[in-house]
Image (cartoon, rainbow, N blue to C red; front, side):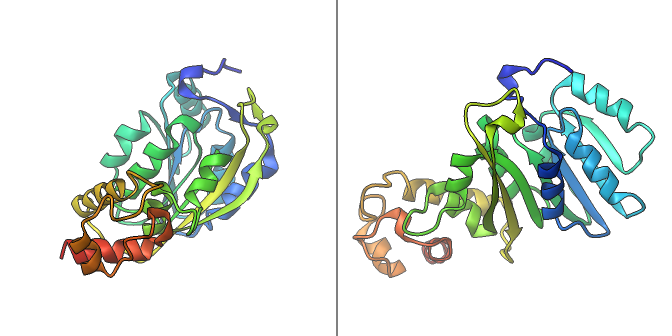
Length: 253
């Protein structure tokens, strides 16, 4: 067993039932590409492999740690359905493209959950489903609803229906992290938006949530709020993702 590298946020999942439940949540079908983020020792990769045998599925397992990438290359060298990629996921994701349905999956290093979520939404092919094991507190934030919405929940839920499936105790990892985790499932909504529009919308939401405790007449003018039919006394967390998207479209039409 390799020593975990602290700066990479490496905590490895131990319990096979959690792995099985995560693979189940992907709802795997034929003719799909599955991206696995940070396979580590390959526990999730092996579970995936057993599920896709004799099916038209390709798995891309992207690992930043050269030690694990080499180990996984040895484990799956004779398996054409599993491609091991030694790279930084945040650099690799924008380069990936596919003609098929894409799903994304993994137990994420807690410290880069938000950048990975943003990168997934900005992929060339926006994934149909995403199943991640992330920090419980972040999972709660991603899945939060009005009147407790956050910038992150609004951005993610503009494009995906988000659900928190189950919690995972910190004791199910080695080494144990300081906090518990949760498995979330994101299922894509029928929203069509190109990358430049997504980035403009992202900036719009950052502006909207820049003073989350203050009323919306702080980040927006009276004219803008009037045009969007938005009550200036509301706060950012009081509007749903659908309302934010509609407001964005009115101001940028």
